[in-house]
Image (cartoon, rainbow, N blue to C red; front, side, top):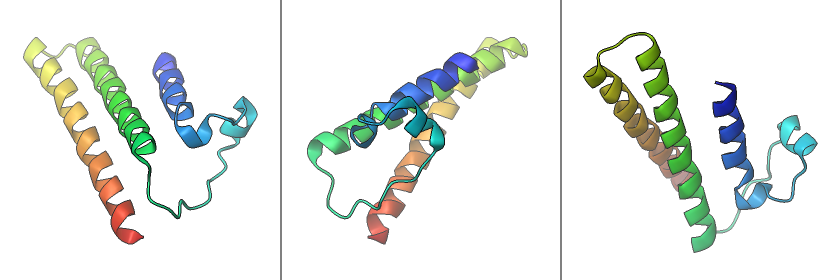
Amino acid sequence: MLACWFFVGAIGQGLPHRKKETVSELASGGTLLPYEKELSNDDAFLLAKAIQLTAVLVGFAAFVIAWKIGLRWYWTLLVAFGTYVVMGLLAFLALLGVSTST
């Protein structure tokens, strides 16, 4: 699980608005100022990539946990794929809410 948290942090730090921050600034958990203009294509692509990588990572963690608790192989795959799909849907709904609130 420690490796999963490391990869989630690496994914988050790869976003364009976080690239210039130091480790201590990232660890402080400070919030960003609201983004008042439309996302560029590059920023939107990087955000989508970060969401996709996070969903894959959470799906992989769910796969490992399901495997370790002894679920049958088909349930293990269903848990991993279901987690991946649910993460994607939640991210889509969050982005939809952000884009409609501005």
